Length: 120
Image (cartoon, rainbow, N blue to C red; front, top):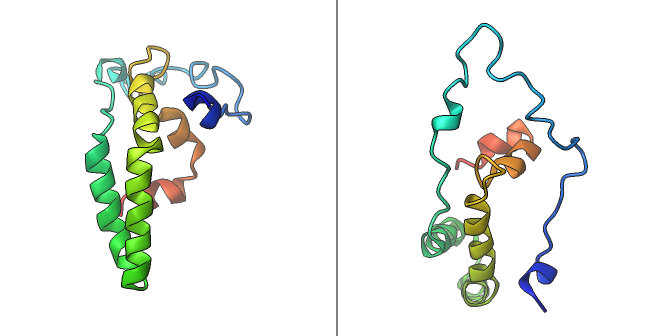
């Protein structure tokens, strides 16, 4: 099974295509966002760094040593199998010219409450 079949790209069906480009840029009479196009694209964190942060953040949530060891085995399996495939896709997405940054569409789809909750 190919990685794209196993992990299909999800297209946003809620917003019309090109909705962001249709907005005035920058807002009339201001310099807000006028240099946005000069910003570097957001980097995709190294996979190993992401996995270590995930493990550190999940450790306090384990109710027992047994649950923690099960979690570690599952994370290690993910890191050996599907993780590198998905990470490669994020890196490829980062290099696309048709999006400002690799997380943009996903970030736009999340409610403001969840956006702030991600920074724990």
